[in-house]
Length: 221
Ligand code: C5P
Image 1 (tube, rainbow, N blue to C red):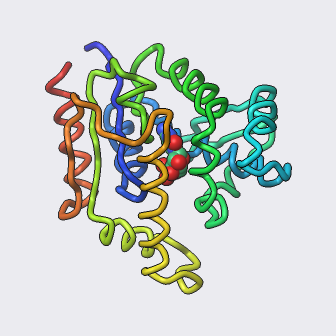
Image 2: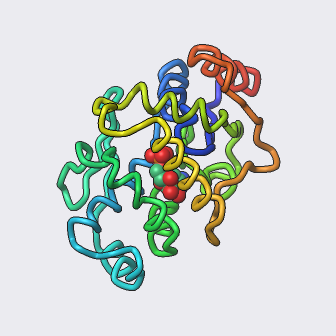
Image 3: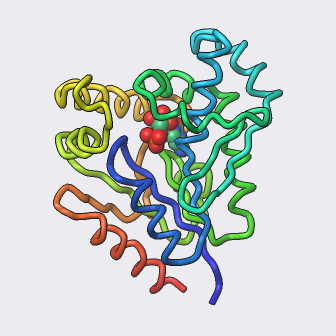
């Protein structure tokens, strides 16, 4: 049967990437983690010493950098100018600054363009904040995945290796702050597309969320 595109959006820590990866595996589709691309740019700018306030410098830098997303079995690698930056992008420092960089127009237009190209041949499960609204408004299946902020913080807490260094309360605060910035930005803010299915996973496990999405996809094609 025909392949489709699946857009999965939602706030930080809702489990989008875990679920999207499993959905892609079940359908034999390609998984694209767009958050990893914003994180990679953020890490690179920090290393280059370019603050997000200097959006002109950020624009210039982002224009001449080569960004590649390499699907490698389950983990995907992000390369910037050929350098694998994947090991650095999940740090608390990057998480704390990524929303500042991701609101910059040059960053968004560059990445949206790349993301659209990756979905041209269909058969893609893409997760992020603006996939259903802006990147792939024609995606055949759109999901808006949420969970309560307490539940999302708890999930993050459990998956953090250095959990001792950060409190649950701090994580909850960080997540709520990131959501506010992502929802409040001018260009393609985080919001549910009108035709997206709302999936509240507060009381769902991963398997249930995956099944809900896969069955949607199967009923579509
Ligand atoms: O999904 P993840 O939590 O890794 O995303 C990190 C950040 O990247 C988000 O908080 C948001 O600021 C930005 N992002 C975005 N648009 C996307 C994906 C991520 O602005 N499509």
